[in-house]
Figure 1 (cartoon, rainbow over the protein chains, first blue to last red):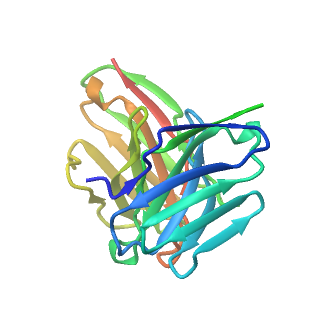
Figure 2 (figure 1 turned 30 degrees about the horizontal axis):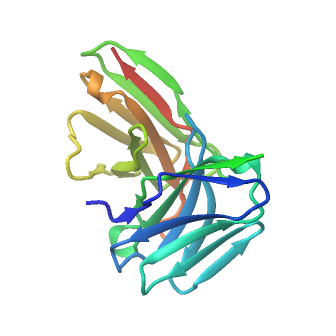
Length: 113
Length: 116
């Protein structure tokens, strides 16, 4: 049972444009969300997080939006750069689960120069 | 920043043998370590959670006797794949958390296991 879903397995964007990666979750108890970036054969690297008390968090070119009523979050990257090409995973966590992370299936982003 | 290492990064073993993978937190003490498994083009699946000095908590469907986890110290956790089979071939990733109140997990670079 996949509690965190990323319905787009891949996304291609032109350099300089905005990349929007989406993530949906089913468990309303999730209260902390993260985005990770992953290159092949490497471990995930933390990118940005947001807690359920916020609806937006921004860090440089990366902004995460949280819509709790829709159980949806998105990652915006603007402007997109070729070095952003990687697989992006969203993850959700809840205090009652001991803060374990549940990962989505990932979206492979390709930024075209 | 917090660094987590894994050793080895890549291992090939024969079917029926056992393989040990180490996960170390290099610059912080990890009260909790997590072991994940990733199949190609799939999500990271949590296998087990280990707290220093206590038995690991395994996720449903993960064989405890096959995937032995030991969190012997605050900086080291090991995953031993016993009697490995080709279907155990996968990418294994560990992560470490410093404090139970802290959501942040720091991931290791992963270990590619190939069982022939």
